[in-house]
Length: 103
Length: 166
Image (cartoon, each protein chain N blue to C red):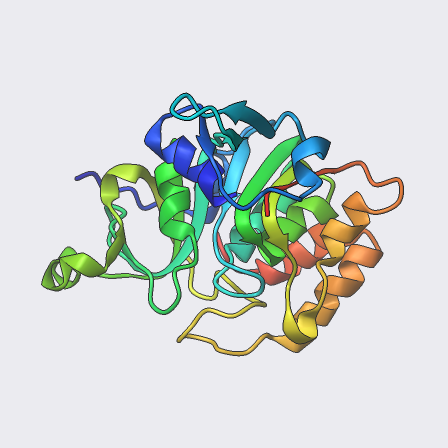
């Protein structure tokens, strides 16, 4: 087994333009939110996202316009947190992002 | 969605899926759903295309330096995401010794050979919840996020949330 510890900046540097990312967690629960916020500080773009129940971490990358597609069964934050604001901004009206709902 | 990821995990191009009948999704997204005849009895069956993510990004409570990880509480579909993806990036509340994972091997949700990076990142799910470390949403930061989305200020919000982290 190899030691794979690295900094947040190093790990986020593995992500390249156009990659498909599976985002873990559910709604507001156990999302890799700080990782996605780190990506929000970088110029990476045209990301595609997927997950069974995308939440706030995926929402970040739609809010910044860095993700252009999301595959999901459900996308929201639930309870008092409500709908996912970045997803709505990217997908509603003349939004640029594409939703591929898989139920 | 789950069957698309299962197909990705199993290395097959698509998977039949039950329960899509009556849904407009099948006709709206022909690049994701197709109907075919079962080769066994000729009946129609809905199929979903495989998804093979380049990376699965998963936040866990405990991982060792090699990428063996435990998820405490609900694991959702995270183990499946790591199987479907080519490689996984873990962020973890803490790094633990491998001896701890060896005590209960069945609790290891992600094995090291699927993992490319392990980032020790306490609070990595904030402003959301990570049972049992922090069990309520940080509402001040969440509202700041909602405002940032409206005002195109998410990168600035990110700077503030990540202040002092390398």
